[in-house]
Image (tube, rainbow, N blue to C red):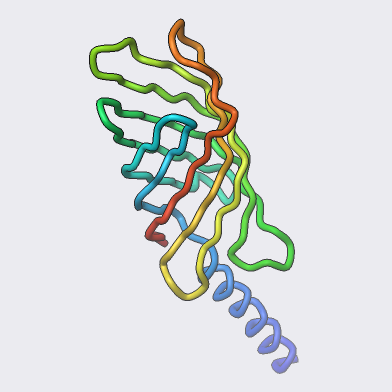
Length: 153
């Protein structure tokens, strides 16, 4: 009986250790938001409210423009691929343009998130089209986001 309990304890502790290596609670880093005619560079951060529900905020800068984006995402682990998750969600963006009207947009997104095993490094890539809600600006189908972040457990 003691051997069985010991074996169960080892398996449970092993699962906790594996989870700790590939999951993270938050991440901060650099982000790139690519549009057809603009590329925004800046800060990005995400926070896991639970295993699957994530909030993300991005602040990007480009010549004479600043973008602020808030996203909600549902994350789900790929089966058999440690550290690799897919995600989908939606959120608003506001582009502040010098000497021009601000652009308000809705940003659905679909992407992948990879936490490097044993290293506090997170890479992510997503497709995030822009659906413009304001009177100015154009919808963008070919809009993408990249992130390189430091994971915080």
